[in-house]
Image: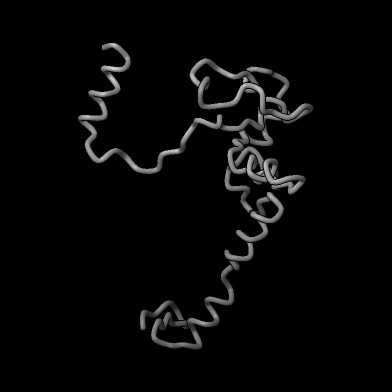
Length: 142
């Protein structure tokens, strides 16, 4: 056991470990609350600009509306409070990736966007990066 004053830290003592674990916050419950409500509960604030609006509730009005929620991209509730319109604009580099039409009216207009139907999210790199790069350069005319 590693001593710390009168109290000792005994990592082999099951009772000590249970007491220590009971003092820790329940991270699973906090993550579940975040996913259910979209609100983040934190004493420190985690240096974030917003503490709510992290999730978009999937409405089941019809099947296509439900599926569209999985293509949505929300830029954050923080930007809804800003008076400038620059964050709501569809920039040229997002054409072909973000749908220019599928955005709601009202305060989330331009902040809640959706991927185009042809857009695919890639999570792994190519097997042969050199061939992929050469193919891209030939398509771009370089």
